[in-house]
Length: 213
Image (tube, rainbow, N blue to C red; front, side, top):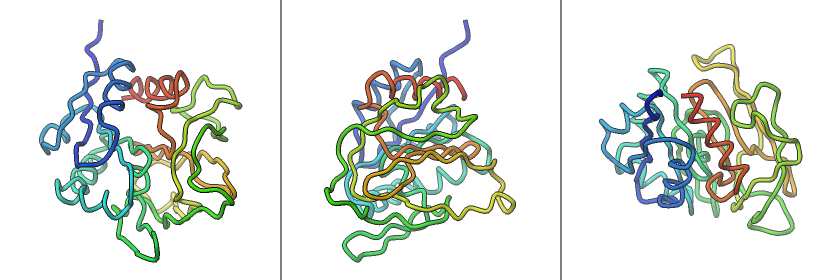
């Protein structure tokens, strides 16, 4: 029997650490909640959670040099999974209440407020995953995931020809406007929804990701 994959769940003061840890353990991984750079760099996979405001998450991430950890892992082709605001901070910047905050810059684009009649977007919603998706492998088109957010990346301007990462697979959802529900881009993947709150569907997604490491 092969050894369990090791995961580092980055602890930078934001995110559902306990529920995410439980969900990742159920997905078959050996999980360490940590801010230790060495552990985070050497694990088979790094998970970056995030809840709350973009600026606060970036502040916490910079406080543990999480941006450098993410960058170093990706430079070496080492898998990273962002969840919710942990996805948002991977983009160039976020704008909340008129305040612009610089993100990690791993992907182009701005995280902005959804133009929707009801915010936050809270509850279950379907997604449109592309062919060949690893995260959504084996799932039906009407599978629902649990979202809690008012902001999202709503466009994509990545030029695959000028990237060291693999071409991106984009998964979309809609609440008032279309927005990115997930991205798979070589070793870097992320979901706007919370897989740890998405029942069997979220468990299957996390299992798919862990098995891909």
